[in-house]
Image (cartoon, rainbow, N blue to C red; front, side, top):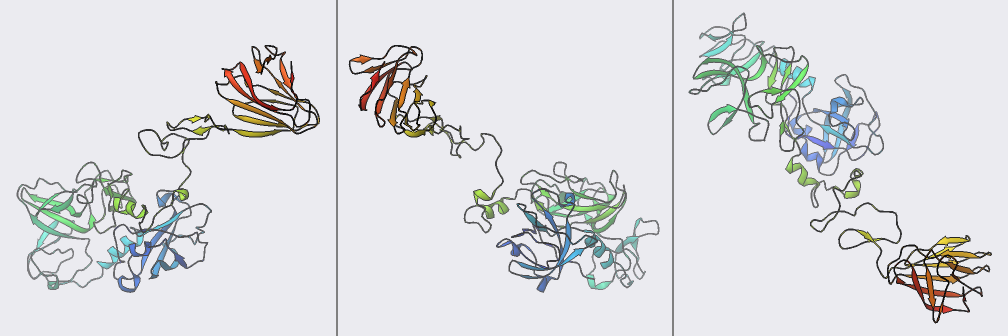
Length: 453
């Protein structure tokens, strides 16, 4: 049995939601290139889940494993409900659905079965194998073997029979390693691997056994025993902070690598492989595809609704988006990012009731069969203007606040709430300007005979 193809960063986005039973799906433009081509590499399994609500596919109750049997550009042909999952709907409105080519149970099963049921061969050189108790031992020339590993032999010199693992003997002076540590190979030497970057996470194996100060056995793939602190049936990743170790917790820090490398079968053992696909968190390469001009550019209005905070506000020191509206129709944003009323701003309002408090920078059309009483603004700066135009048959009256007064040519209204101006004809109009903040107003122009009280 051959293994399914593997590829790094094989995560794709569906272009739409799909119901159960659908066997042809379309990916976002350009995403098909992130996956192998079944026509040349063979079919492979994908995990399908709701990425909007669940960052981890394992948490989505409707997750599904499907098998991709064909790909034409961004269109996949799939077989539903693989590996004991159900043929589920993946079409909830407003949700984004993704697929990822990653380690599944089938991967482990295939690795196991691929290295089992091979013909026992005869050692033709210095080979390392297992004793009956599981201890690595040298297999003499001419002896059949169960768990072989090449030291200096060509791969055509033997075949495998029911092996548990594949490893090699390494000589490196004063290596300092201990069994169970994860290694990389860099600059011609073996060193502890670490999931903090793509370079440090390029692992080549696990230390199987320390022979001496200068020699160790490197496990390349297979079953590892003698470990501690594992949780059965758990996938372990290359640790992101402590070099050479494992962790069951994937990282969410940008730039770090989530590299699965061991599936624990008990608290002390598990299947090791460095062939599992690693995923860079917040990959800058992936992010560039979402930028303007990228293969998967994202429009701003397609993103989630922002929180109610000021993170995206523009200021005098940085670009940004508009701050939250203050629900005042007379306000506009000034050059310092504040809501304010421009000096020349003016808005007309039709008043169909019998009373209205006036606001600076506003005009009022009095339209009622009864008298419409319009009260001057209690707060107004010098230079602010209000206007009144008659329309309804009831006419209008401009009332004052305490300490208020209106200057009409040589006439003045009575100071305080007792003073006012009033129309006589239906279409009388008047325009006033504030001359003393809050309290005093002067008539700039009028039409008709205005009553001054």
